Length: 346
Length: 56
Image (cartoon, each protein chain N blue to C red):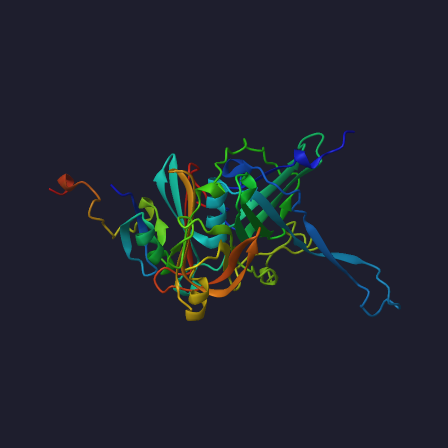
C-alpha cells in the first residue's frame, strides 16, 4: 500500500447554502478550492461513562456512551475574489446578490436580530477527500457548518503570501462517511494581491502617502456552540439515541470586528493626535484583481484604541489598533465582493 | 443604467432599489432582505409590472 501524503487532500464546500442545518449540500451546490494548511476537520466524539453511578458495587466504569459530536476546521488561503465573497457572505450572514456573469456582486452585512434578522448563520457542508473510492483514505462530509470567523492579512512584498485569508468554521457535528460527493472541478481563483490595495482610514489615504506597511482585519461570530444542543436537537444517526447528539442550531454570540495596521510614522502623521482626540471616521479597504473581481470592506465608524510608535526594518512606524463601532445608518461593517461565480450563499 | 434588486422590509414593504452599497447597506442593516420577483406579494404591484395594454 502506498503512503498517503497531505498534498493529495482535496476539499470542497457549499457554494450555495444548505436548506437547513441538517440538509447536506449536493455535489452541484459545492465548489472545490485549494488551501494552504494541512489541518483536517476531524469529527470528534465526546463520550461519558457510568463510573459515578451507584448500584454497581464499585467505582469503576462498566459502560461508555456516545454523548455528542463536534466538527471544526480552519481554511488558510491566498485571498482570492471567490473565497473573499464566500467568507463575507457566510461570515457576516446577510447577502444581496446583484449583477450578471462575469460580474456578480455580493453585498454583505452582519445580521441584526433586533431588526428581524435570524440569529442563525447560513449553513454549508464541508468535504475532505483523499483517494475516494475503492482505495479510500479519507472521504467524509461535515454537514451544517457555519463560519466562526475570518481574518484577512495584508503584508508588504510581491508574493501571494502577502494577501491571505484564514476562515475558521464549526459544525453541527453531523457527518457523512463516505461523503457520496463527486469532487467538482477545481475553481479557478483570482488573487486579490497586496499590490492592489487601496486604503483609507479615518481620513488618511495610506496608499497614496505610501505609508502602509501591513494590515489585519477580522470578524468573529463567537458561535454559541453549547446552545446548539437543545432538547430535541437530534442524533448522529436519526432515531438512534445511542449514536451521540448533534447540534440543531448554530447561532452567533457577541460578535467582534478588529482592524489593526502598521504605517510609517513621520512628521505630520496624525495617528497619535487622533488617538488623543478619539476622532472617528470610516475605514475602507479595497483589493482587486480586475474590475469584475474585487473586495471592498468598509468599517463604517472606527476610532483608534491604541497607537504605539515603534520600528519596522529600521523605519519608524506606528502600530494602530482600531475600535470598530456601530454607525446608526450603515451598521458596523459591510463588504462588497465581486467575482465571476454565481450563487454564493444563495 | 444601474442594476436594481427587489428588497422587502420587516414590515412587508417592497421596493425596487439600485444595487449600490449606498442604497443596500442601510436597508440591510434595518432588516430589509432581498426577494425574488416570484416572492413579491400578489397585492403589491410595482410601477414597471405588467402590460398596461392588457388593462384597456
